[in-house]
Length: 468
Ligand code: TYD
Ligand code: MG
Image (cartoon, rainbow, N blue to C red; front, side, top):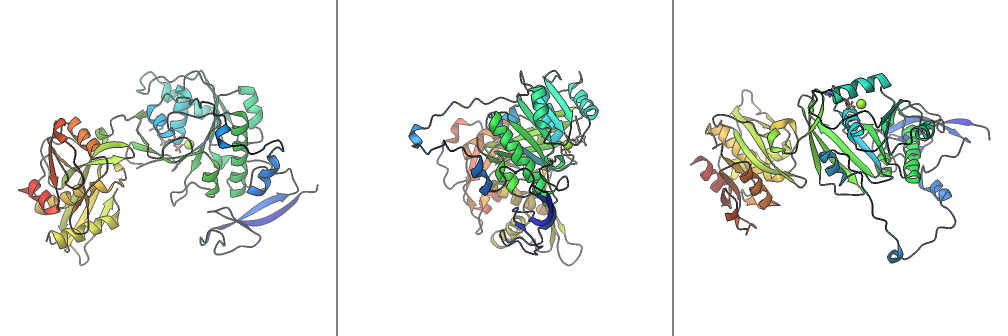
């Protein structure tokens, strides 16, 4: 059949196609998301792209059967030899899984995956890089393997590398290397001749991913894809990419800070509640097994404006330092700024402090900072945020042996938080002397913990305990 090149427009958000450019996508309703793409028609049939063509890949012998009769083989997960990564994956890599790891440039995606490729025991890994030459990969690996490296168990024996951008050639690389795991760094640099459009375009990303999915499912070899993130913090390429893969992990952190968090956004084989924490060192990523270590500073004396929250991220408790500065506004409108905390939530807490606790903060600039450069979404840090602001405002330091957990309601009540026992236990383990928690809901006997537990109904009670 003769090949014909056609220009179409594709929505970056949902992957909808249109022969004409549109300001607003008629499928997902997003504005200004259409980009021009060149596609070839009449070439080899693309498989798996779109729901209509997938039926052609189904064999006629497949028939429906009762769910009760479906045979389940025990899924054998392969441990990555990296406890944090295993935790986020739900216990290891499942055969045939397609795993996407997204993150901003330079955050450490290639380092994380290469380190895993080097340390996974008795498994052959094929590392396909479209971004770096094999020499560059070797240089990076040498840093990870160096005798002074604090990252243990890495060796280059089982890792095969190839620098290539063609997905069409991948099968021959796999035939040559016979790997147990394939890594593609990155999906945006890959291309296939099935689609006549430039590298990194939406049709290329879609087609390459669907080819990789087919490969992973038919061979049972798990594939890890690295993906870039666009400026809105989403994985570049249409949302379809996230629908196609089995697992989506996001690697995030502040570039100026060495701590990194690996978050599970989607996982067909495990929970999305888990996070993995790493520290970026000169020679690789170190697993942080005790997250509180990164979030607590040790001061010889208590400082005003600082308090410690007993927070949870996923299923893990950790103690985190909250710093606030309240100072007289130099100009008319007071400034409010928050790092690692929702600014609207901060404004709400300020309004509650003003109205219910009678503090005059309207003429004050308020700055808030969560230590460690991480974002916390746990509402239980409210109480620590309010206490830090008040501590800075009154210039009275909070006792360094005290920590707090509690959500603040609009009437100044301290609302119950989940997993209170775990929070108290973590605080006791880290040597805190006292923890202030909500009175509502918690009918637990805290006597077994080596810490004084103070339960409060209202913000005022907590403040009386802190600043009396
Ligand atoms: P990289 O893995 O290349 O990021 P990505 O693939 O997400 O773009 O890592 C980039 C940064 O990490 C780079 O600025 C150097 C730093 N780095 C370390 O600090 N320690 C190391 O051992 C390595 C390999 C990199
Ligand atoms: Mg990279």
